[in-house]
Image (cartoon, rainbow, N blue to C red):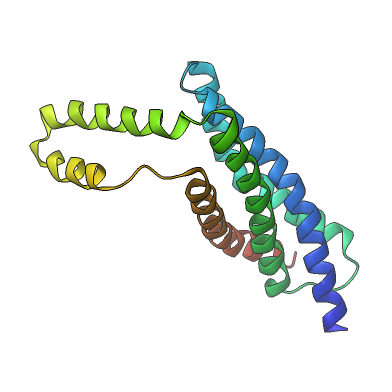
Length: 172
């Protein structure tokens, strides 16, 4: 019985991960467009703030569609794997974008970072250490950026799922 329940958790996490991935891909396109338009930057921020709420809604949908009694562990597992599966799909989209569509995007962002450090150094002399660190680091590749985001979204999924699992597991 427990094995069957875990397979339902993983199956639901995959489907909900697909929905979350679509949301995160939309967020990604707002992020890459936000450099040019302030309204897209504001929408990007709003969508980013909405990620935990979307995860909560998907967890609530999981709870509604499951007939069996769910535990904190089930909610947490569902949330974590939902973020993990979504991050894998997002990583594929990011890799294609960074590697084939806009190959100069990462380099442009790196150069913008260096320009911002120069501005900061005028008011904060201690920023020289940050500049040295950035100058000594190579520009990441498309695959490194994609893998970094898999780790980042998986970690965010851990944190968000801890909170959402607690809220969803409460008995009313």
